[in-house]
Image 1 (tube, rainbow, N blue to C red):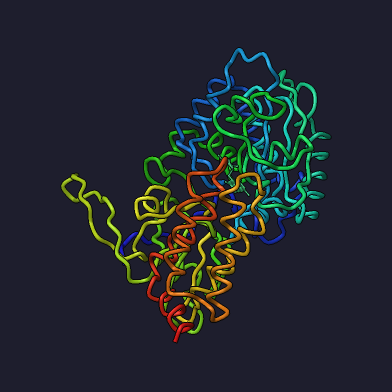
Image 2: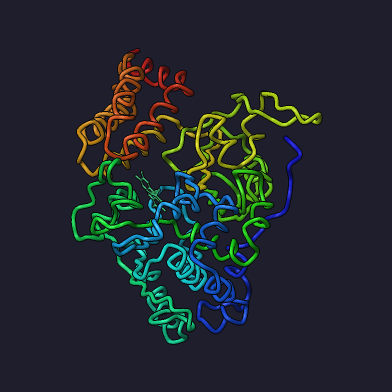
Length: 446
Ligand SMILES: Cc1cc2nc3c(=O)[nH]c(=O)nc-3n(C[C@H](O)[C@H](O)[C@H](O)COP(=O)(O)O)c2cc1C
C-alpha cells in the first residue's frame, strides 16, 4: 500500500469521546467553546465568506460543493430574508457521523450555525433533523435554550448588532428529505418532492422562495475550526481542493466499525479499513467496498484504477493503483470512478453474496423513491423485482443486461440526484460483478 499513513486527526470529534465531556454549555465553554463566534462577530460578513473561501472547505453532506462559494451567492444587498438550514437528516445508508456530534457536542454545531448566519446575513435558521433521531432533537433544543440564556442567540448577540434564532424541525423519516430541495418542501409543510434546478437553487430560490443556505452538520462544525485557525491554516490540512479533516463512518465486515476523523487524503482506503477499522473480521479477504454511502459506485477488490499522481520531479503522471491504495479524499475517489459522498465506507468480505447486497439496496431505493419522477418511481421497483427474481432462483440470462438497461434509463432523467443514487449501485454492481450475476441467472436456467 502507498505510504500515506498518519494518525487520526480530530477537530470535530475532539471532544466527542473525551472522558467526562458532557453536552452542556458550561463544558463547551470550558473547552474553548464560542471563542470562534466572538472572533467571527468582530468580522464583517464579507470577510467571513472570504475566510471560508480561502479554507477551500467543501460540503460534507454528499456533493462536496465549495462552502464559501455557496455562501458567496447571497448578495450583500439582498432585500428578502435569508434563511440558513442545517441538514441533519443523515439518511444515506452507512452514514453515522452527524449523530455523535449532535448527541455529544451539540454546541459546536450551534456555534457553527451562528457564524454561518452572520456570514450570510441570516436571522432565522432551522435544524432539519430526521424523525428517527428524537433524542438528538431534544439535545439540540436544550442546547439552543442554553445558548439563548448566555446571549449567543436572540437579539443583538454579544452586543454585535447581529440577531438570530434557531429552531429544530423534526422530519418525518424519509430518505428524500435529505435532498436539499425536498427538505425545503418538507420544512414548508408539504410532501418532500424535490424541486427542479434551475431555477430552484436554494441559495437563489429556497425556503419560502427566499435565498437559503443548506449545509450539512459536519460542514457547519468545520466552520468553527476555519474561523478559529483562519482559512489559510485550515487549507494547509489535507491537500488542495480537499482540505481539512473528514469524518468517515466505516461499517460492514470490519473488526472495529465506527466513526473516525482523518486528514483529507492522508489515508488510503486500505489504511482506513485495516489500521483504523481493524481489518476484516476473521482475517478474511475483502470482496468489495462502497466508498461514500450506499449510492456511491462499488469498487471490486483486485480492480485497478488510474490516478494522476505528482512525481518526484514535480510533473503529474497517471499511475495504476489498487483500490486499497486510493487516497481517501473527494478528488481521488472521484477520479477512481466513484464518490466519497457522505464519507461512509461499507466493507464486504469474500463470503458476501453480491446479488443479495444489490437486492438489499434495490429494496431500499424502491421504498424511498418519492414517486415524483416516473423513471425513478417505476425503474427502482423494476430493478428490485429483477434482483428478487434472480435471488429466488428464477433469474433469466437476459436479466443482468436488463438491470443495466433500466438503470441507464433512470440516471440523468430525474428532477433530483435520487435518480443517480438509485441507478449507480445497479450500474456498478452489474458491470463489476457481471460474472456473479450471470452465474446466478444461468444456475437458475440449468
Ligand atoms: C437523495 C439525496 C439524499 C441526501 N441526503 C442528505 C443527508 O441526509 N444529509 C445531508 O447533509 N445531505 C444530503 N444530501 C445532499 C443535500 O442535497 C445537500 O447537497 C447538502 O445538504 C448540502 O450541504 P453541504 O454543502 O454542507 O454538503 C442528499 C442528496 C440526495 C440527492
